[in-house]
Image (cartoon, rainbow, N blue to C red; front, top):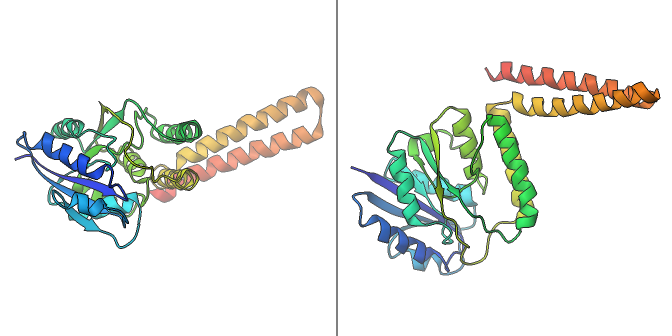
Amino acid sequence: MKEVSIVIPAYNEEEGIEAVINDIYSEFEGTRIVFEVIVIDDGSTDQTVKKAENKARVISHPYNLGYGASLKKGIAAAKYEAIAIIDADGTYAAADLIKLFNRIEDGYDMVVGARKEVYHPFLILTHPARFIFRFLCEFALGRRIPDINSGLRVFKKSVAEKFRTTIGQGYSFTTSLTLILFIEGYFVDYLPVSYKKRKGTSKVRFIRDSLRAGQIIIETILRYNPIKPFILISTFTFLVSFLFLSIYAFSTDSVMGQAGFMGFYTGIILMAIGFMSIALKK
């Protein structure tokens, strides 16, 4: 029998939560999939709980803990091995969730919805940050990632619970989960999904959440694939040192020569630290 627990983290999402739950029931009730809907109220001060409790099991936090903490609570409370997560703001369609669930039945550990269009109020500002995060993740993994932090995905409860203490507590939950499963050799697949403009106001704080996401990405890479950051930094250091040495060769500027040699030796040291980190990890 096909069974899935659908977890919805929600913080002051009164404008979208009811429609999201109704959409889930509308799509899933016509299938043979046994499902439960769990809403994790992350300290909401509006009507989120009231609008969700008619059709969902609501678990409330006394105060806001974060997106990742809410998902962890929902995963722990879930009855079934297959866990589906979807946002409470109406950006994702429940029909796509069924598509992801059917795909995970083919033996995958996680199936992620790759968004076709992304709406964000700070798109101009977030694009550079998103590019940097995606570059770091793809460099660490050595492969292309269609969507690093999609909030629509289906995965196995046992897999997520295994890395519970490592996965981020905030909006970095999805990014860190994606990184860890790829690095650890789990089977991950992507399917294209639609993405609509959210209902209500975004709870993302650009500077704080971007810095936190960057920190989690670096921590995850250092924990599971430590050589990659050192390769990246040492390569950059070598390039800069060669630039200085080239200038020194043509101008005989002693300052450029000293800087070039210092950069070269620094690159060697960083590379050595990277190889030592691999040995320590083992």
